[in-house]
Image (cartoon, rainbow, N blue to C red; front, side, top):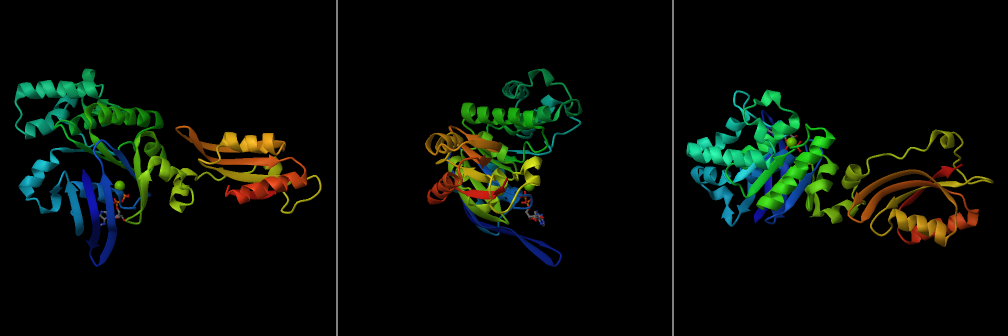
Length: 342
Ligand SMILES: Nc1ncnc2c1ncn2[C@@H]1O[C@H](COP(=O)(O)OP(=O)(O)O)[C@@H](O)[C@H]1O
Ligand SMILES: [Mg+2]
């Protein structure tokens, strides 16, 4: 439905030029919720703004529903843009207009009749759960409510696509979840395709079914959420998913030795993935290898039935048994690091 084909974009400022996008390709199917994740400055905003040509790529093609956007006249493009809604981190509401009037704006610009505006705006406010705020001004709303107004406004022209540029980045975690729930509803009830960009893995995990990772203007990897999140070899994904460093509890750290010795047990950090979930790992250690252990830290991420993340444990079996288990890890490509002995 949406084909972003080999687009590149260089910004020129005074004597400097900066390549913000380099040969980016992405296709998005109707009904998808696609997330693009990357660090600040990666080119995310440039990419999402390229979709409706708010930013015109230097090269490449944007093809939406068979139309080559780069070849449209400005009049045709303006017409097409009406069917693509957009929301932003800072909401961009007009402070001098009420909630109702903010949502009505795109309809007014489209010369919609007063009675139709009345009907449509009320319907939209219902969708976003703000029926009772129609006459409020933005300043009296919370961040989450402001974003709901912005969403209602973005839906006014019945778009088939909603572009979200860091739409939840200014919101607290609970409000973020409620806005993401609203986006999911809109996707499912209204069948609107959603392309969102974010620097937060939580956002991606909550709503997206497809993901692309962008860094320094290039797409590093793309795939289903499951594929991306389990690709823990990828250093960028690793940073997003597993940024937490596992610190060793202080009282153990004090007596931690680099080399094995009598009466010392290894501290092992193990990475979990689809093949080795926390349940499987612990059962392997305790039921199969019969090694007593002390679980020191766990950093788990859940995705459907799978879990990912890391465990830090102390193996308290006989030296030989502990070694056998670590040998088993290494044979079976279960990432593990012996942090020391205590
Ligand atoms: N209009 C512009 N002029 C010059 N440089 C720009 C412009 N827009 C973006 N950039 C640069 O392009 C890079 C990518 O920006 P952006 O797409 O906003 O990244 P992100 O949204 O991932 O933080 C940044 O280094 C930014 O400074
Ligand atoms: Mg941005």
